[in-house]
Image 1 (cartoon, rainbow, N blue to C red):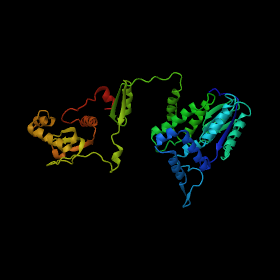
Image 2 (cartoon, helix red, strand yellow):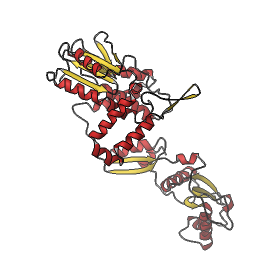
Image 3 (spheres, rainbow, N blue to C red):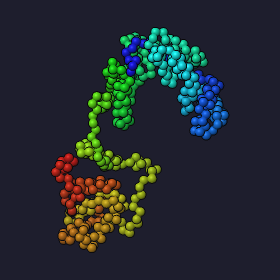
Image 4 (cartoon, helix red, strand yellow):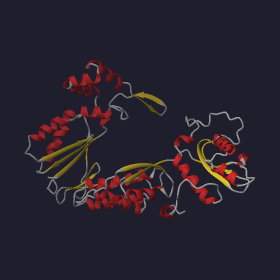
Length: 421
């Protein structure tokens, strides 16, 4: 910034009760003037003429009602502070002041005065003695119908919005207020993503909105606010490190991600798998096993089995890992995305036909007097996603050991150790 370190005089002004201080007749006059100056753009975007719009606006401004101590009152002056068009009306109302002050500043030597306004807060920064007071007087005289309050300077410091301006040894600035509001508490019900976003936001603002002389102080103050809000030191440090890396002279190059793979989320496994896959240029994204729609009975949901079975062995269930006990003491573990009774019916047909592709039928042929106990079949897990069912089926077979047939997946070697199997 070219003004950093320059000797200056700073004055801040605040328009008291801006929305309530806007005279309605004067506001309507200025709005009509703005519409006339931008007539083609206004009518093409709104589709109505200026007179009709002004009639609607006048009716709207005279119809705002407030509830005070059980009684209803119509607001006579100003604009309702909760109105969605109040910010736009205030900008149009103050546009004449902006144009007048801009012309006055342009008449002064170049770079002698800097004037900035944000809604109802005005900053006057003069680099020549006496000009700040002149500009202040100019603003007050132009807006005689408004009330201004001047900010106080204490030990060469003055607050403007979220910036603390230092003027003792030249113009400097620091992000943050002397008495700032508390941040979002760490024990709130918000997600970790929101809380980490709050940490990143205050640290990023401290870096961007502070000069080089006070950036360290600004970061320290924001860190103190985060600690007072209960955020853990490790979380603050990790997020702060990521933010500060953006401002380093040598940015960290991100490795190119070649593929994106969507997998079900399993606690304790998914994030480890994601870190390993990232080394090979694969980005994993997770999908939740249980959706929020399952929490309410009013959601559409998925329909179950629609078939009418003649002799169902069990209650119809779709997408399950099941177990069929055998008389010899072994059992068959399988999975199906269809109805469980339909799967049992197909197994029964395969046993009756001595089908070669059926592991149950093959075992019945090899094991004398062994028959499946269809009525004692049970559901081990419910899993709608096909890949998840195959994994659960394999895990059940490995855990039991005494099952007919081999598991669908092989979890030996490094993958087995990774999954702690």
